[in-house]
Amino acid sequence: KVILVILIPLNIMKNTKNSMHQRLILAIMLTILFTAACSQIRIAYFFVDWYIVDRIDDYLDISDDQEKFLDDKVDLLHAWHRKEELPKIVTFLKSLKIKLAKGLSEEDIPWFQSEYKAIQSRAIDKISDDFVVFLGTVTPQQIDHLAQAVKKKNEEHYEINFKISEKLWREKRIQRTLENLEDFFGTLTKEQNKLITSSIEYKREDYLRQFEQRQQVQKKIEAVLRSQESPEKIKNVFLSWILDPDEIKSDMYKKFSKQRTAKWVKFWLTVEDTITAKQRNVALEKIQDYIETIESMANGKS
Image (tube, rainbow, N blue to C red; front, side, top):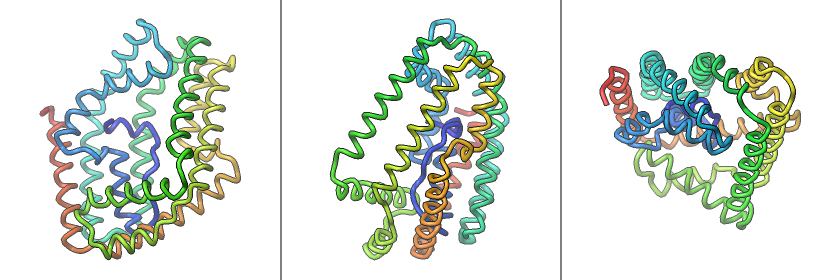
């Protein structure tokens, strides 16, 4: 779990101008995984190459030759990322810190989306050619293994989220949201907890839509892998999907996604309005810690 996780889309938390706050905060968790302390970030980044290959092996049961190929390529990607991308992420964090100090606004959302997409696009461009070579070695049996692994993960996910009462599910989601906020801003008051909780619109029906959409996308990915198209054409399909996720979403889900985004904005504005100057300073200090940590990593210091 590290900066390279930017290659894997994650869902953040929920609505508003603090939609800037936490969306940007959890947005940075997307970029840097702010769930960890600085020392944990260093350790995670050190092992990220191993983690990536291990995750691929979980899903594809790769051969020794494939593992050797991936080890070499991921090592090169890691070295490039440390030299070229970490300084850019530091620049991004410094800009974020300035915006947060002033008070994040709804207008900052397009800025963050643009920065995030740029980070993601550079990494994808860097690995795309190696991705083509690797695809050429994937066997039908490995695709079968992938399908079974994904099915198992989905079953586990369904068990955790849909085999409990909706009330308990919602309570857990709200608790996680509040904990994430406190991780970044410090302890929230009872009044803040109450106000923020009342603005949360978690509905398991909405979450089920996300889950169903994800399964549909997974089936499309499997179908492309099983096709007789060339690795180059398959790569282009995947790149278009990664860079423009709406391309593989149903029209109904696109409409739902826009409504969900509006709820996020509303939620974050509520959070922004409740944050005190002291809590804002806690967040600013954390961002500065991340900046210093990543700068030292970029300079080759462990």
